[in-house]
Length: 157
Ligand code: TYD
Image (cartoon, rainbow, N blue to C red):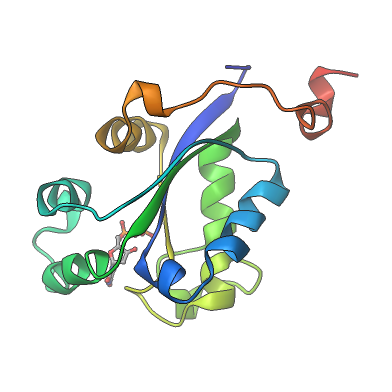
């Protein structure tokens, strides 16, 4: 890993898959220069969902959140890049789609607090835990891409 390079965990949630927005959303991450180092489609099990959203277990919307998250397969990804965690949160936008700025994924495509298309880790500690929760070491790939020379130009020129 290069200096300041981070890895972040993404879920393309059921509405991203069902509304055929997977490609649109993925292209926003790719165009930013983030590198996909892990990707897989799964149906998230109850125990994993309960662990992932344990900070919301006492909320009135917890049950509907779980039902929504189980309503379709989802795509899990790990993205890498300089400051990847905060950069990805900016691209995704704040939780409630109706409050998110135009230009962000949630701002452009979501009117909901629940169906907000994407999960993205919110801190280095969370990202580390979430990647470990959903990916095995052998499902993550360390490889070079030629565009890195331009994405991280200060390191090369
Ligand atoms: P949270 O971790 O607070 O937000 P974020 O996804 O932006 O990191 O909440 C997790 C998910 O819980 C959120 O993406 C959608 C759902 N949720 C609701 O359904 N209603 C709500 O009022 C909130 C705050 C979250």
